[in-house]
Image (cartoon, rainbow, N blue to C red; front, side, top):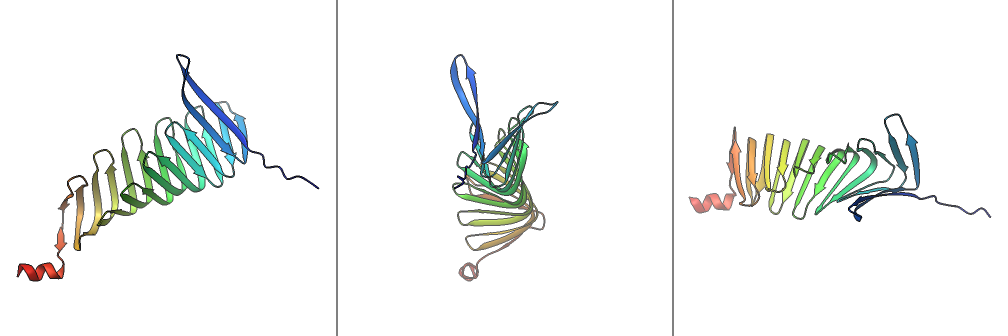
Length: 208
């Protein structure tokens, strides 16, 4: 009887400073290839891929590529990225893990503790705590939702800029505009350009 062997290769990179381990970084998968190019080393993983790099963890079902010489990464098929309280997913992820930049394509979404973002394309700038989304943008948090062509999210400031064909709703109040600014801390919304606000019917009756 032939014994089926699942080959799992693991590479772990330790960073030492003054004799102490500062961080652990590893790439795992059902198969792992090492390639030495003129530019430098390239690690390619296939099947149930996982990359741990400091505070970032990336998983993919099909493939993961890490170019160690310049920090570029590529992950494909059912990709998820975990960072602090945020979880992102997409069909494909590219970026540079050393420059802390990631691009999510295809069914892209980010889940936070109280917020949800969807778009055709999402770019995450980790060091700047900024997220940029483009194409069929959808934002939801608490009792608020909005749609737009483009959006910029400042995570630390909890501030959002929406641009292009903005529309949404909060507590039954529907709004639309060319652009909008949303302060999630103060719950203030500023609408700009062709701005319109529709109040719930019962509130209209109370005002009359």
